[in-house]
Image 1 (cartoon, rainbow, N blue to C red):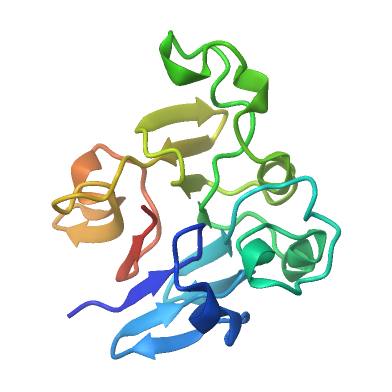
Image 2 (image 1 turned 90 degrees about the vertical axis):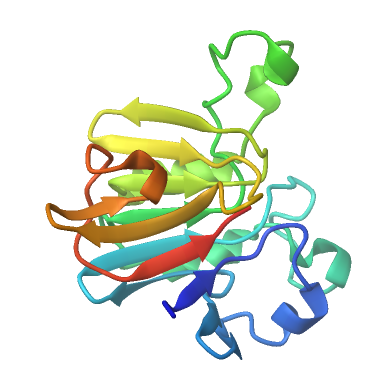
Length: 193
């Protein structure tokens, strides 16, 4: 079995994850990465930011279960020495992705969709690939050298993010196939739904 690494969102077992905010093993071959940070797994430079955006919680201390799932300004300290990771995992969409989406549930107020902290982090550390969940819609967006992929619901194995190696090299997600965005060699799987 491949190792499984995951980040937190707004439906995870908060009481359990609160005990390991810097991450840790939760089961055999299954690791919670923590609230925020970056590491190398083989050749893959991986960054992550758990949680969802709430302006009311942004500058509050991490104190109560109800707001544990919210991103904090202090979470960004984990990226002080992070530059250009290969892959950035986010639970929440960064802002700016709903602009120009035809119809649908974001048409009336696209500026209110997404996490401005995640957007600022993306602009600061410049990851090659960004994978985000939370909204449960699939969306690819190319921004210069960067690709942002918003993941649909994880049902029946769909919506799973993986770096997979085949005869031509490593690629991001089995659904993207050999033509999908390239990342360095690694055996990484994460469920972001």
